[in-house]
Amino acid sequence: MLEISTAAIASLVGVIIVVGISMYNEDLNVGIVAIAFAVGIGSIFADLSAVKIMQAWPLDLFMILTGVCFLFGIATTNGTMEKFTSNAIRLAGGNTALIPLILFILITAITTIGPGNIATVTLMAPVAMAIADRIGMKAFLMTLLVVGAANGAAFSPIAPTGIISNFFLAKMAPQLDVMGQSLGNLDALGWKIHMNSEIAQMAGNIGGFFALGGWAWVVSQRDSTLSIDSIAPKPEPFNQHQWMTLGCIGLLVLLVILPSLAITKELFSPMFLRAIGNGKSANVGAIAFLLSTVLLVSNAGDSKAAVKSIPWSVIIMVGGMGILIDVMDKAGGLNALVSIISAISNPVSVNGVLALVTGVISAYSSSSGVVMPMFLPLVPGLIEQLGGGNAISMISSIDVGSHMVDTSPLSLFGAICIACAAEKEDKGKLFRQLLIWGFSMSVVGAAICYLFFGVLGL
Image (cartoon, rainbow, N blue to C red; front, top):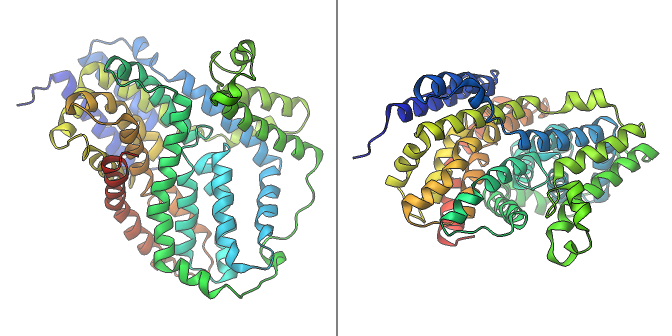
């Protein structure tokens, strides 16, 4: 029989209450509530001072997220991303059937290079839903395409959600090394998790797009033509500041990827790598701050507008939950939760269990702000108690499971797509369709994670 200390029980109850609050009231920033619970539980039950508790704020993560989001805030507010999007959509020319493919590639590319899934869906949903109306595609299908593409690319190591995942990956690496599961090149593993997400979202949401009418629509549109100007009017040429912004984004991507590749790493001196990272690899936040300063000094961006565009609510949620989970760890609650999950799992099935649990909670709560910070720290303990398992597979299952349900209208993405759907759409029907689909994805996501990351060991 599992024995759990009073402190561990208190921390578990506290986390459950905080997660419950986040599921009940989405307008309340649960990060603030999490900090309050952390101080109360830590001081009363775990003999921790408030100063010690507050020091658990993930400063490295905060700086990286702020830097990346600020750079892409400049790119959004100075019109660069809007013109880039319009020019990309115009590549379809008059071929209507190519538009979903171009939208998928465009959303994937934009998410991957840095803005992340939240910013990309916010940017692209109004455009995509307007296009769906003009080309005769159901809003439901376009929602699956938009959310599936954005969430598939969300775990790029350059994007905010991927940065959060990789932060916890780096944090647990020393524990796994002690257990004999050395992770090796963390930069490369970050891209592997990104690819795992792409595969899972392709099987789930993009697979659903084709199975539920998307393929039939493409076939029906093979010979259809439509003036591209009616879909994406030709924008003004990029001005000098926007070209500079595109150059800085391209430089960010190169400076993050090239130092992590064995074939190109030798091109960078140790001094240069120290300037942009830790001497071994680049720090995307540091590079983003450097490039942002170049743009601001050149008058290519508005710092006030860029600061306002940063998703502070998500950053506060992640930081606040990080503090609460740190208290939970010190109080023994993390080990207790690990024991509960390991009691109903084995090294293979744990991937499906993690995806199912995170999916159900994420249907009502923030995937990256609440669920990931709560479940990712469990991975080393689960491997130890289960006597095996693959850390990257478990991380992928938590990441994917928590994001497969985001088409639900109770989530930000589903709600945005409904709000942007054409007036002639039956929004009540669309709400019900997305609600059923979103909740079904918790089960489908669990099955996908069990198969891909458990049985096949991707």
